[in-house]
Length: 242
Figure 1 (spheres, helix red, strand yellow):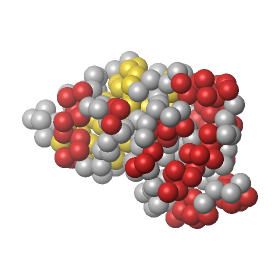
Figure 2 (cartoon, rainbow, N blue to C red):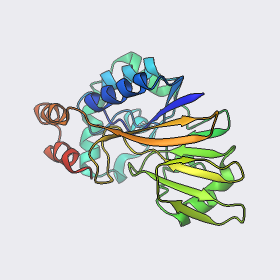
Figure 3 (cartoon, helix red, strand yellow):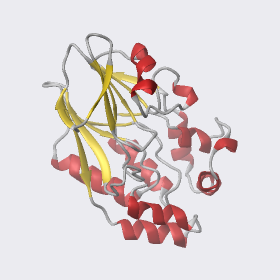
């Protein structure tokens, strides 16, 4: 099976449409989404609808839970808080009902899907380093766990001797005697200094993973963010990928 993997769309319709178009060209069998469909961006309802109708599985992210009142937003930054309040009144009943159905964890073939971390999905902890990853390997089933949340792609590999290391490439064949935690980056708000939309393809028949990027009509998204009264910074940061 060839899976398209997407995460952290953040209501960026233009980025999502560009990624879905690329995945259609790639002829993937299914698309799996790792959460945060909404928040920050100007098109939450349209993005939820596209994800709902184009994915096999979708996992809940912290922004999805925030919109539903399932987590405390006191620890969100001001930009995120304002976006949550604005987004709450933009979503249709169908979109809200869909968000309520999303699980925190899913398993497919020989890999796991979670938005933040497999050890405590509900805590929304980041996996940014070898130290962050080490304990999390004890909570995954199969060869790999795909995550999002940080908006920064990273591949962490657990070796047969229990050591964990960072892999410095984003196209590789996963080794069956090892395990991996792979952050697939963000469709709608990358933070790795590359403003292009990020997504991934995982071919389970040969255990091959590839992170991919695609340009989208960013200026259109930025214009809508400003026109709809969202913080200007949310438009500006898209240009720099941070």
